[in-house]
Amino acid sequence: MRLFAAVLPPPAAVDELATEVRRLKTLPGADDLRWTGREGWHFTLAFMGEVDERLLPELRGRLARAAHRTAPFPLRLHGGGRFGRRTLWAGAAGALDDIRLLAERTDAAARRTGIAMEEHRAYHAHLTLARGRTQTVDLRPYVDELQHFEGARWQAGELVLVRSNLAAKGEPGGPPRYETVGAWPLGT
Image 1: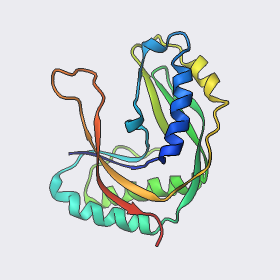
Image 2 (image 1 turned 120 degrees about the vertical axis):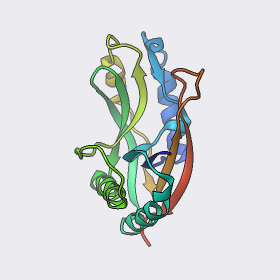
Image 3 (image 1 turned 30 degrees about the vertical axis):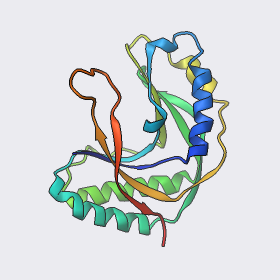
């Protein structure tokens, strides 16, 4: 099964972002982007890829400990940016050191479980909004518009393990479906 650990923004934060995305979709060239849906908006902490189901009990235990060792922390959706010419994202503000620490702990939990993780790189809290259908899409106008986006503050209080079900055959380019397979409150 294809898994990742994440922090999910609450419904009110998702609603704020949805309003901003509706505005972004009115910009010229918006049809050249594949927009992610509300159900896919999350802050990925650690992408694990394909995980053998036999590892799931140990992984759950290790993620529960990682969540227990991390106190809840404040976040808000804030601004945005791009990765290269293909990915548009919304950013975060608030306790970025805390979400970074939680990301490191989830990555370590996966590694200790025996999951082969990609090469470790510095964590950057972001929520993917859209991907360019081609390399020629200019994401700069969208990034410029996102610079003014300020979401309300909320408390991150849960670590979630998510299964990503890729689009079925015959649905090329369709969005993945996400299914929560574990969730643990942060702190005690």
